[in-house]
Amino acid sequence: MPDLSTVDEEKLRAEWETRLGEKWLGVNESLVWVLLPERGYVGSVVAGKLSVPHEPTSAVRPWAGQFPKWPSPSTQVTSGQYLNDEWADDPSIMWWVTADTVEHDAARFADHLAPARGHALLALGTTRLAVVVEQGMLAAQEQAEDDGKGWFGRARSAAAQVQKAAEGLTSGTDAKVPVSYFEVPLTRIADMDRCRPGRSVPTSDFLRVRFVDGSALLIRTIEAGSFAGKFNHAR
Image 1 (cartoon, rainbow, N blue to C red):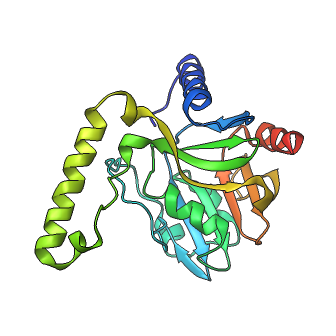
Image 2 (tube, helix red, strand yellow; image 1 turned 180 degrees about the vertical axis):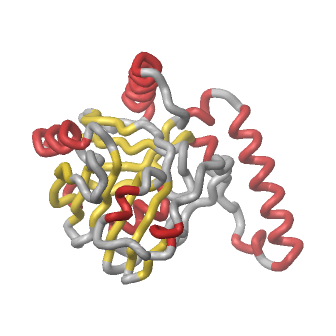
């Protein structure tokens, strides 16, 4: 998402809050906060392996949106030649994940945030935390398993996905409906707090989401303290 003025950012937030309230929230569920789409990459250390930018390690529904062209993370970060939490000093890193296995919740969040860069928002409801995208940004699911078998099957499948995605992006209301790309219930979140990793002066604020499985998702945002407080109040 390009840099917005404060007024435009508030207008966009209000628009998303309305759309989420109308189309995404469940019965008796309230919206706690929304983190708008941000410019930046996902970095991760999953099962001891560094991945910057993060490459999904699990099955992820195909993404139909285009990838924005952003400056690449620094060689120091991509090569792992940083000390401790110095990755946070690279402003191109928006999200950072640590997890012992690819099945852990933070790793799964990374898998879904990475392909949706610049288009995904993070929404916290009173029952769940979710990566939310517009429905039209997701490629259509395959209808038959055999469609993807063989060269002709793969070509036909790819062509069908492109066509369906294009139709979805231009078909109006349905394409704009907010849907969960990935979500977990709040029972799988142990805590949220504000932290300030890195050695730059001043350091950046990050919201740290600690999952029950021991994995963690760090999110660069000046609203870290407010988001953490609202989560703890909502529980």
